[in-house]
Amino acid sequence: MHKAEPYATLASGAVTSYDITRDVLIVSDPTLLVLASLADGEKHGYAMMEDIQRFAGVRLGPGTLYGAITRLEERGWIRPLESDDRRRPYAITGAGKQYLEEQLAMLDKVVRTAMRRLRPA
Image (tube, rainbow, N blue to C red):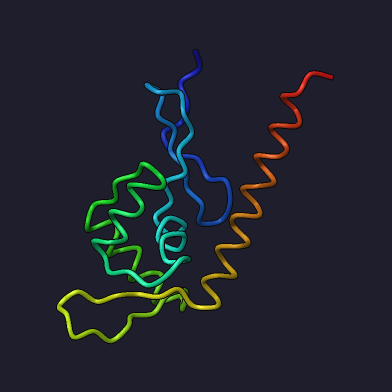
């Protein structure tokens, strides 16, 4: 079996990893995972980590998560919300939703193409 590269780029900023032990392609780009988590409502960091673990099976460490949060804020794709609690919630912005939709459309195109090519002629 050909050993896959540990990381491959599908699209600008969309990093995937390949787990050769399970032969499963896992989308693990923290940017997409955080935006997907926030797409259904505001969350603080720990809630995002738990949500991402549930829906994607990917465990982001605090450094990875907060590094992604910083980059997303700088790009204007998420924004922090005021909170009386020590935990700061974040919300996705319109620009963040647009970016997420574009990336998901690209991933959908890859999946649809692959599925079509797998069907017997």
